Length: 386
Image 1 (cartoon, rainbow, N blue to C red):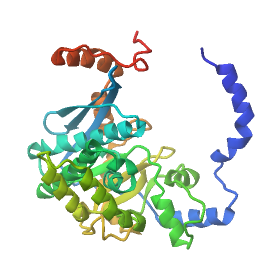
Image 2 (image 1 turned 90 degrees about the vertical axis):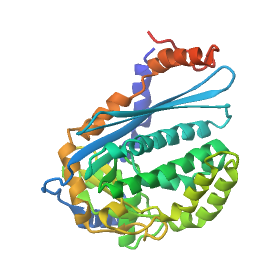
Image 3 (image 1 turned 45 degrees about the horizontal axis):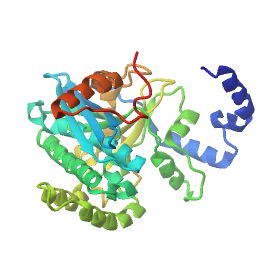
């Protein structure tokens, strides 16, 4: 059943309540005017130089999680790296665990597993990549570090704690490998709901935490639709609140790790080495008029900026010239509304894990290899593929 009539009726009921969400002007005219003016001061034209990178690679992942009739959950994640030189590189990971009543635990476990396997496929093949390469990762980089501090799920159980720390360890190794090969890693988010730019602009005008909050994309939608350009890059470290939380969080994490695991010392070392992780440089760009902005994350160490995540002045504006080379590369890769980056678009289509494949091919192979029938829980098997 389609419920179209009921849908139209409900729109009429709530339309007046929500119309304001789509207005480009706000009731708080003074704050709006100040932010619009400040955004204009931190907005730059797209560069026209040639890209200095000799080769380009893109990495993405996909995953699926299912619950069996005995409560056991299994997770399948796969990652793919393709580029302008060499064969495609791929990796697959299978994880199983006893079921949990905490839905958010399983959701975050799957998400971090995807993040981890993306980094692993690069690390395992980094020696085969030419020097002076640019490696694009789908999604932001800063959040892959801060999830350890701000999210309470990161200390709930050893499995998720271990996975979270393994991600940090893999990223540290990746940055080291890239520095040795004169290459760069860049995170590209097709859409981001961050408030970093808005917060920095409000601070410039003397507004505190009590001022109305804006998403960065909301400001760009209001005042930069129809333009091209990029925002002045921001240095992202840790907020004062995150720095305060760090010590207690890491103590909890270490307590959650299993000393019997062979990777225990490596994980403890990764936590101890956290403070040496580079800060991240973030900005937004509009490659074409009337298109959604991309969020770009670049580890500061690749731009000659030596701030670490713990000592960087959080939300500090940097010289826009630092990101000109990367910006030009991303503009060259832009292919329209859906093809926000040519290589990332291709790798996304190739790595995507089809649900039908999971529930037929992968499930059948699992049952055969384990020698037991694999039956989903009732909620998972309600709908059949046709």
